[in-house]
Length: 237
Image (cartoon, rainbow, N blue to C red; front, side, top):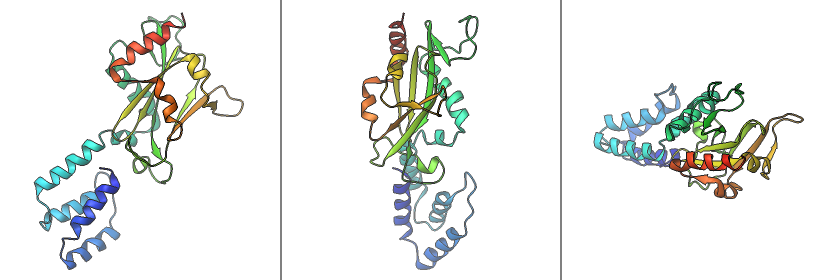
């Protein structure tokens, strides 16, 4: 269930209201000021509960259905740096405890060049959220589920080619997380790699609904990430 389906469901339930209650609800929604976590959906649900259009058990079922379909939606609300540098790194380390934050005791040459270390393999982590390219608004409002037919775009930025052995790309949808593991050379030769800024040293790779299938060969399950990173990293030795 996405946000449109939730709204359609609430609109259908609101049709069961008495005419005067329908008018009252519409009037209040037009003047409603939303401040997280109080928004129009919360208001409609409370109104429907108050008018006994739905019971609490029905509310719980509706809530559980929406939450289970959007379990990663909260990640769309994180600030870019927190999402990429804090959540992204910690998420990978949670998947495999062998991933470590590097320091000079692990790598004497380390000076903040890359993100993680595993079995002598230097790793850079790039995380991005899939967004609906047809919509305007906040990232949360543009979030998509993995099986959506809407066009999506995610741009893996600030790629520096000579700082690590392996890249982990983390693609986040509202209901699913996808992992791609690429060696340094696979990123360098990738057909979708382009300069992020003219004349700069940073690159980017855009993954969209039109080219996502080209990355299937790099896709790994969460339990395979550590093993695959080590395998790709050893190829360079």
